[in-house]
Length: 342
Image (cartoon, rainbow, N blue to C red; front, side, top):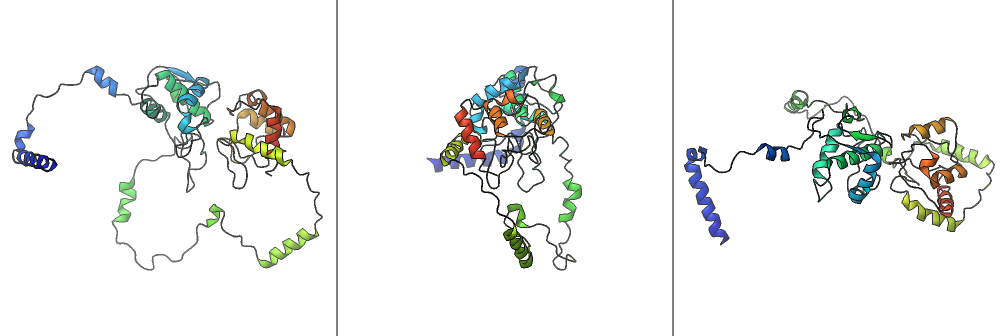
């Protein structure tokens, strides 16, 4: 049956090719789309705000909606789940070989985020969000990227006031004038460079051994043996540390500890106990937390207890969305766990 159908289709195509000019005539099928039908498809929003509908939504409303409709794939703090995309973080990574491209670090126009959420999300249930819900979710994504404060309300009226960090990070596509001419020249096959230089080491992966000489290593060892032995710190309670590791699972979505820890949605927490507040290199803190650090405030155990119990009460307008640990035993445990990472 399939073979016979293919023969029929082939014959029809051959006839159409022979009678080509006849295909140009109108067959009277269909009708022009009505303005209402065109409007139903014309949903795109341009960077200058063209096509943006009237409406508004707050960060707090967006947080509730995001947890309900988006967190299954993108995480409660827009940090991404599994192989689903991260929507927050990645600041300062675009010059690396493995950049983290998120709404905050990469996208040049807020209209792209709003338009994509409104037309394509939630996954599998697209175009079910209202205009106000889209504004709210977009506001929460901005908040997760530290671009607005927790009391921010996004609307069509202030939409263009939001500054995207990478707005100037794109250039006009000039490959036709700049790159293409390089590829049409005769390629060089020998003696193409005067010298060969090493421009990159595998140290970016922390696998390159140091260049320390044997003499320098011996001197270091001698100095170390001559130095007095420091007093051994009290051993932490293994059971308390184990309990803290379990509690810390609630924090892993945003914070890393241990070897190779990096800043994510929140700063890495190695050495946090006893550290001056708001001083991790490369992390962008809220204004309130940065001010606490400038005043010399320290994350001692008392401060950590107060912050972990209710982050938003301890630090005014903190960007940390975690609700806190109401159980003092949980706070004791997680602090003991953090103490093991210097």
